Image (cartoon, rainbow, N blue to C red; front, side, top):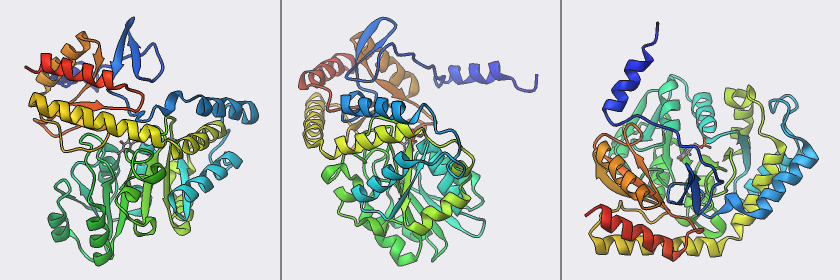
Length: 381
Ligand SMILES: *Cc1c(COP(=O)(O)O)cnc(C)c1O
C-alpha cells in the first residue's frame, strides 16, 4: 500500500491530536443536539444568530423558487447572474469599497488572491497566527514568505523591503479573538510601498458601525487597505466569501484567479440569502450590544474565578489550557454538564497552546453565560 494511513492516524491519536467529526441533529443555534442530547453551544461562529433568522431563510427559499438550485456554470461562462451582481454592489455600498468578487468559500478566496497575485519576484509578510487558508496559499505561492511574530510591528518593519509585495494579516484573529493594529499596518504598508491584505472573517458583521468590520471599528478608510477579504459563513450566518478592492484588482482576479475561473459559481439563491443577511446585519445593533454584554459578563466572571482568558474583546474568548490532553479532558467535563465547547489543538494553534475556544453569541442569554461560568468553576478547580 503506497499510503500507510492507519499508522499516521494512530500516531496522531497517540499525540492527543486525532480529530473526530461530530454529527449534529439540529440546526445552528443557541443549543445544538448531538447523540440525542441537547447542549448549550459555545462553539459556533454564528455570532449574531443570523443563521436562523426567518428573513434570511426566506430570502434563500424565494431565491431557489426564482433562480433554481444551482448556478449551472463558472462565473465566466454562464454562472454569473443578477443576484451575484446585486450582492457585489451591496458589498461596495456597505463597506465603502470600489469593487468586490464572490467566492464559494473563504478558503478559496484566500488561495485565489495570494496565488494569482504573487510571483517569484515578490515577497509576502504574514502574521504567524494567520488562518491556515492564508498560510497554505502563501506556502503554495512562489513568493518567499516572511513570517512576523503575532502583531509584532517592530519585527515587521525590520523585515519589510520597499515595493516588493504583500503584507497579510487579519482583522480579528480566529483562534485568539484579538485584533491587528490596523493603523500601524497601514502606515508600514504606505511607508514601504507594499500592499496590505486584511482577512476580516471574524470582524465583519460584529465590529464597527452597521457591522462594517474591523476597519470601521479602528477608523481605517477602506481605500487604504488594497485587499479586503470577508466571509459569509460567520456573523452573516450563510456561506461563501468575497474579495474587495479596486476595480483593477477585481478585474485582474476575474481573469487570473484559478479558484474563480475554474469553479462553479455560488448558487444565485445563496447570493440572495447573503444579500438579506447583510441587510439584517446592518440593522443588528441590538444583537451587537447583547453580544458585548455577554463578553463583559464572561470576562468579569472569569476574572473573579481566577481564570485566564486571552486578551480579546470579541466573541472569540480563548481559555488557555496548554497540553492537548488537558484541553480535551476539560471540554469533555463541560460536555458532561451540557455545554458544547471545542478544544483547539495543534496544528491549528502553536504547540503547547491548546485551548478551549469559547465563542459567545447574541442568541445566548445572560443565564447561559452564568451556566458556563459555574461549569468552568467546577471543572477547572
Ligand atoms: C473561516 C475563515 C476562513 C475560511 O472561510 P470559509 O468560508 O469558512 O472557507 C478564512 N479566514 C479566516 C480568518 C477564517 O476564520
